[in-house]
Image (cartoon, rainbow, N blue to C red; front, side):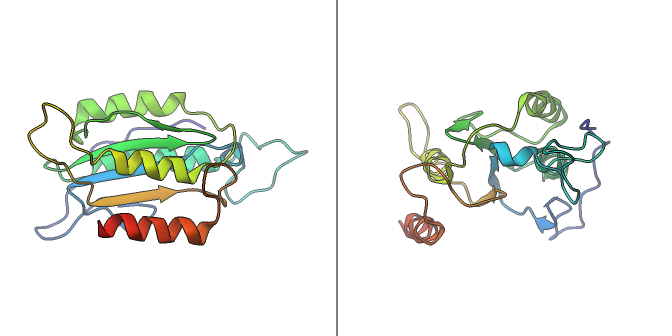
Length: 179
């Protein structure tokens, strides 16, 4: 399954947004996309696995996530920016600095996404901790940046990390956003 970068999508009229991630409008000015790359993301979307192997003719969960991420970023408001964090057994932040959604960064993102593979467990806790750490002020920065929208995409319950209970994770996130 190959990712195709389509022509830039049209912007919505004033006050609206054309950008969506799996049908959910992307409206933030600094957006974090937190994407599960665990082994189960290699399973087919809407299809069956033939002999415990993915059917190469059908998209996988991960390939669909990559496609949706590219579409979302490509149609974001040019005044906004984004981060990409992936996680399986460990979390990985692809850029500590927010990236503008321009043509150059979209091409770079497509190249980056082509390197993602599905492998390992599901450590949602570490991914969220990494994402929230992006808001920290560092020496030499003008002021605190704020991620004002976060999309977490996972196909299953957490299997690794300090916290694996989904309700406890939700409570910790709610508590973190109140600080």
